[in-house]
Image (cartoon, rainbow, N blue to C red; front, side, top):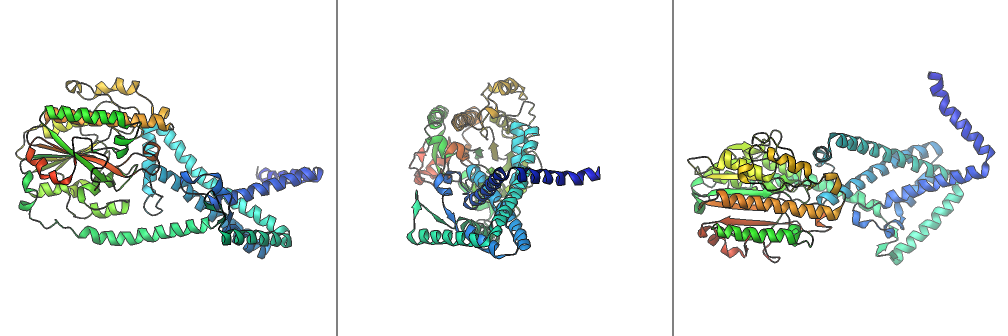
Length: 545
């Protein structure tokens, strides 16, 4: 067996050699085609953008200066050092290619580039999301495919650069003349600033990308130190509890986040008509029940995902836009909204967290006396893709386990609603509140709903489904308020971030709607000077904070 393993590659090489001797013209053409393909791969890798919208022909018809510099070094080296350097350079180019491809997906989903220091744990979250959405087998296959793709890119780029290096070293004088000609063309294009579709022909793209990644690394390291100092500067941390939120004493305060509820839901031509009708109808229904609202816009610290960054930013007043900042602030004692109410001694605090499926130490930082996670609400129905339960059930559990119970103090509640989490299929339907039971009523609804794989690659269907999910979440939240709210209930609800670019569009803002709803007119009188819009639908020109 050992002999066979050793001889097979040699036999293949002999067969290839015999074929070359017998077919010299065809062999030469094949060799040139392979070399040409290797050169194309190298040039494409050197010019590869890191954003999807930058993919057009003009981006790839440029002359990369990095190719000229690399060729000059390879031509000058003897054979062995040339091969070693070419292989190492190919691997480095492969790493940069992987980073650019990762940036493309991060920009598409999260509106920012991949952070090589902070974002590794998000890859695990992505696999969990795929498992919840498309099944564990698909998630495992996707993970294996991603690893194989990375290995393949590194190997192919190393082989491609080695192939080009061998071609350059075969006839150094001819290669040198060609390099001088290409360099002259590059310098001419650079001097004259020649462009194709607004893009310079003389490219320094790879140098620019390396500088970009290097600056991002430095920025992450500097930011860690600076934010640690910022988080310690707590304007209200030493304020006595007796002086905190005096005008809200006796009120049941409810801070509610609706997943992915962004400006696009209210203004996009596909989603907005249905969402706006729901907001207007809910405003009218609340008014009949004695509630009134004012709405504006907030700019979220995150986009497309990372909901916990939006939650912690709003609740702390600090700009928590990356995982390191989140770890820093949640491990400290910077005052949060919920903790401020608890600190007075006049409120109890509770968290309703249907998206939490493991330990959640952040509860202490938020100042929550009690937290109900996905397994503590008695839900026996099906998951709706990533969402562990429909929002209607989560709100009913909130009423049953906390808000509806007799208590000596009013509650300050931190409620996370998840039904509008991507991929927005299947979307739950509202059922009679008296029919909710343990959630089994949703089994038929989930089974009959749209499957994630049917819409996940279709932007139009995704936008339509997203709009319906926001309509559902707003409807059940306002229905809950009409059913269970009273004169002392104050509801603050907002989005945590915009949906991904496939739904919100390229270059969408990070704005999310925020509404304050109350029966007591004194509450809304206190914010009358904010310039917010009456009702649940903020005007386009309402203040953005």
